[in-house]
Image 1 (cartoon, helix red, strand yellow):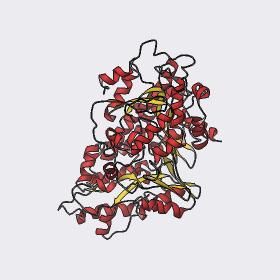
Image 2: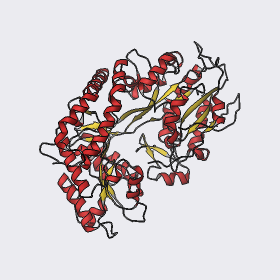
Image 3: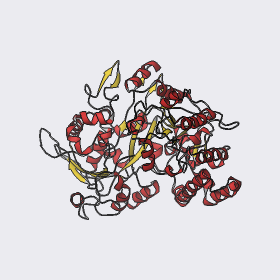
Image 4: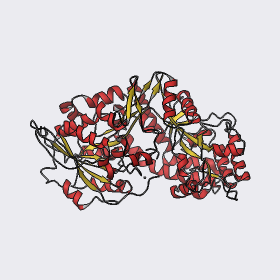
Length: 578
């Protein structure tokens, strides 16, 4: 739900000062949950001769005192309030500049608006105008591996072995020990590195970030209703909201937002369904499809009834603009978000006071024998891809840059900001001093960690806090303006067994060439058919009487093949962890 960004890409140089050499310039740098071309000037800055575009066998080791000059291409972070274009006003930005200077690095960064980046990067990677380092997250694994075989991007394991000081391997093998199986091919090749995230723990338990149904607690209070625990409680509350006109506008127009074209909407999980065309059943260690799960028909019957009753406005399905408008107009009694989200109330912008969205966590008794699932963002995350292109000739310099990125010092300013201003250390634990502020307040005060300011342009390495007790963790959550209901929902997620990961790829080993061929052949067709069928069944324009024929069509499109491929990848991942 990001606003459209400006359409001009900017090339920005980092200011670097060393005792031996002074240079000047400026530096470039979630949730949850957005064909452009860069400017002629920025393209010109990246142009290299055909001779320069081919990497040397050994790279070009820097001489003593030499500054390594690197070019980087990525999407503008696009934060509405903590704006990249205002980065020079943030102390954390200058801390990054100092760190680069200490490492003898100078970066020239090309920041492209997010809404243009997906199309632009496809074209750019086939051009002669390549930077040294590029965020290639919109490009699929198979295409990137092909680029590696063709020499468009460079294989990294050899470079890391030759030039690294050990930081990269320490991060991937020790602190984020699920990382390497997700980025290594079956031949042991590495063509990209990633963002890394590790969540907090208390009493050695990982605190996951659950996603699910949020409900207007202030409307429940107005209707004298308790927080719903069963699906029947929830349904009765939704009808009561309309009957009582709890938003007070004189119309029975209170609705909920459910994106019925996908299974990742919270309501499907109440019926024990996975969150994608394939999903991970973590209890049994099996890749499953919600189309084959027991209560998929019950789910569509329920959703269809809500649409018929007007509680789901079908016009909002798949339309972010309409969803935002319904929220702004104070019409939405329930929607889908992170359990701990503190930003939801601000979406209601019509002047209503006392808005209070709170997490339901999950609902029971959706159907006989049904056990609800919970979608979660797991503690360790690996996402986004950053490649070194064939244009890079300073191989020692680029690995030096990556060693800086995968360091504790960089992770601190990216995750926490400036010690003494944005965070402090108490009893050996980092405590944020700004998490109680909204992004708007942070932007006005020019106080932020690095992640919202330059994340995505440079990789994000986000660290955690290990709280000795649950009470210490709870106290920190309260300082971040989380309600008791939000804290309770997060606590439930720690021990909840029936969950499926938000990011399935974090549990799948790198696909083989044969598996990539299967995925590329079948996945798009299955996804398109599944999305369309979900909407038709929800709206009642397709009949559940013909459900078996729909399953046959999905099988013909390759659903069983996709399940088998992802199961094999999951099995290899589990084996790598053992």
